[in-house]
Image (tube, rainbow, N blue to C red; front, side):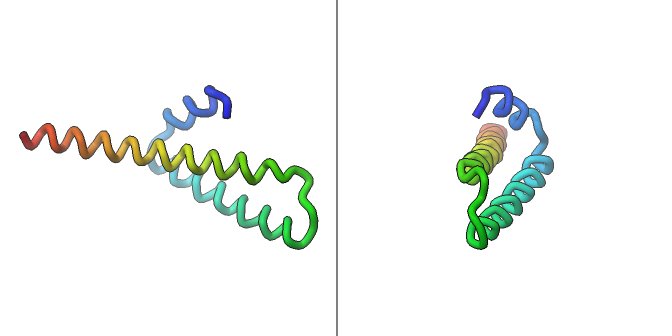
Amino acid sequence: MKSKDKENLKNLSGTELRVQASDLKKQIFKLNFKRITSPIENPVQLRLIRRRIALINTIMRQREQAKEKTAAEVEK
């Protein structure tokens, strides 16, 4: 994945990331269904979409951990 794509994802808000992840999951479902019924043109596309979803999940988890860390520091 290009570094510009990663930076663009990092600049999105949490709700935008969730919406994008759900759209990508819908795309995977459609591609898998299409793959079962007939061969798809670009099978690598599935892998790229899965990786993009993984990156989105990683970014969301990092943000969650950062919030937990700051909350723990405030309590001290």
